[in-house]
Length: 162
Image (cartoon, rainbow, N blue to C red):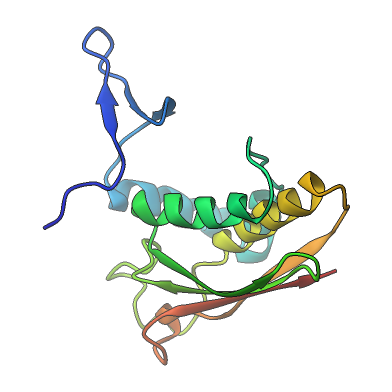
């Protein structure tokens, strides 16, 4: 087992965790997934994807934002995100996701895509890259295939302009 690739700090007085001065809450994977899939069951996967889609912006510039974000979500245990290609001016990218946190034993080989929530993360980070360069780009990311479908050992995402 390796050590975390991020510096985790715990406030002695409050017990609160932080990484890079960003407050964090450590929860068991099954707790997070049980909540996620309960909301999905109530709303439906399509509606939940719409709810999760709004882009979040960060405080960096250029394509480094996208690469930093992929590295950070990898380091934080969401899975291993590999940028296969990215063309920020064109608004396109392909990202492979190995060992997704969303593909637990209960959803492995479920025959369906379960990692769709990451699509909005990819859109938001690449839209931010465009905005930091003075361009307005509306992007759409989609999960081309998912490890949970049972035919691949990873997930693949594609980002394209709307």
